Image 1 (tube, rainbow, N blue to C red):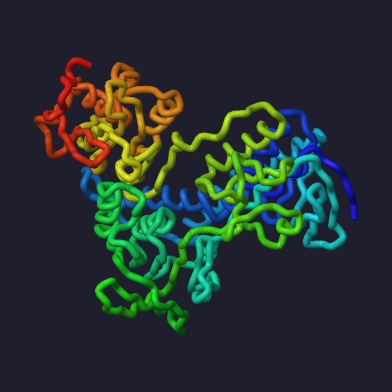
Image 2: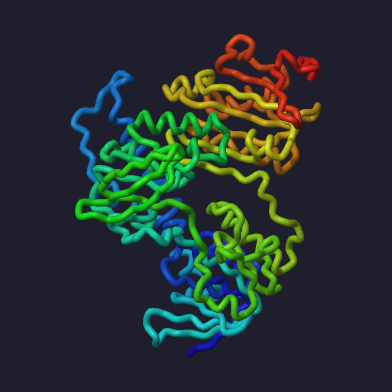
Length: 504
């Protein structure tokens, strides 16, 4: 086998691996980037980019199906093949960008992109096995970054064939909109696909939820609004249900459910989508042989990206941290900076911004009320519906709300925010920055926002907490809320505050 030595060997060219490789190049290091599948990883092909492209297209399609705004689109035709092809074009756009950059640095001599599966011989040496045995390589490196990514989690009693019973990997292989589909898993991904297929209106969607509400990690108001909107689109949510069995039939898929009250039901659909999480691609890499500590689920047991082997780092979905593209990129860059002593700071996850592509979209940063109460944190909260924001009124997209949490003291440091509604993703950056800076609502109150814009609603929530709001909660008390919660969960509304908020 051909043998070379590198300063850094990055295994996996998804978001975290590509980010790590680029940061190492910034520092003038000689980098090997190994990828067994496609440059860009699942984050492009079967994950964030592909699914969010479908969501965007489905949202646009819904706009052609309404006559509420004074205009009507006649003879709107929906072509599944064209929709999927547009998704593939989106993916190819991003792949082309990454490949162009990789090619540039290969020509510069900074990067070697190697296609194949990496297996450790020892902690400094890997064999790379390509599809063509003639292209096998052995390389050594001073440092390694394991950005091995993940794949959909499978259940042992369900025969996933990516035809009738599929995972997110099989969405792009569908030939037409299914007439009916059941989705197992009512977390973010399951709810996003329920949103996408119900938006297109060609598929009767069923959602299996073992709890009494979907999105159980979010507050009730988020969960209830999203579920209500899904049901208005025809989605049937099997609440408090446990999957007994699922099998393929001649015409599609049969599944049996058992409910908490003891009764059972059997349903038949054309397709089933399994969305019960992901598992890291850490098997058959020789990691156990070199002594790398792994969890029972195959995640690296790391501390601030560093594994128990001091020159091997773990990032992205290989760790048990938050599995998001922006987190993966953050960890990839951080691993390189820690590796070469540029930073000694530990990664922070308390100001991570998230988006859920639902109906409508949901954005969040920091903690929500549910988390604050579980941790016994005393806080103040201001909530305002979209219907009082001029941009939302103009867009005729008034279904949504802002919710801002701060500490229950005079400083009122920002703890977190949730926004449900149109352009929700454009609202979180300022709050994320304030959390990282330990900022307060006073930093928001007099900030001049562009008008009209959706983020103006955040400012009005901050003003509410300071007793300075333009739209008053005592007038519109069904749509605006402002209260504080003690450590034991006791709620006091704005007019019951002991201090005079108008003095702030």
